[in-house]
Length: 112
Length: 115
Image 1: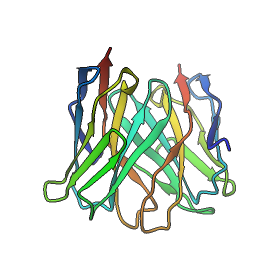
Image 2: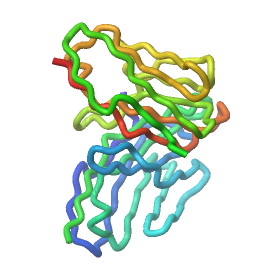
Image 3: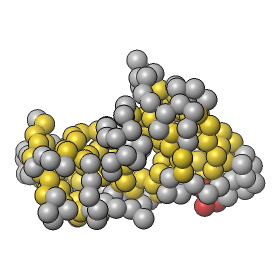
């Protein structure tokens, strides 16, 4: 069964607004990763946050990790129409050959 | 540097037919993975290969076989296709040391329809 659960399933905002997506998981992890998928394309890695980190930034992306609540959030600031895509969180265990368990994703629509 | 390549891009099969999906990576990664993506289901791991010469089942291995031909190539075979295998298939690779997981690089996908 899939470990990551994402919320919301779909999000529609206007350009310039911030978008926040949440991910919850069930057991202890090595790290948590966020990926982006444009329609009909493969996934692209956005950011990786390790279990001993609480926050990470990359450009307009900010990821937080709360291991006590087993949850993570992805914030996209000042969104653009080009940010329209599906966003997935993926959790990684220790000693598991690099396996990732993906959530069902959040479909983000940014309207011009 | 092509990254991860997959062939074919599209395929239509009839129930009972067999086919092999090919995947190759040129990043010298140890690990390779096969996923399927169905609407509303996210990605589910079919099989993976942590290193050359090893393969292991993922979440949904039934109806599939894999071969890690060498460090670059990892193929997925459907011996007798079923309509339930209609999906988009993604191959991915990553550098990993057996203890930690790193980012995965994905191919463009194969869209398979079984009628």
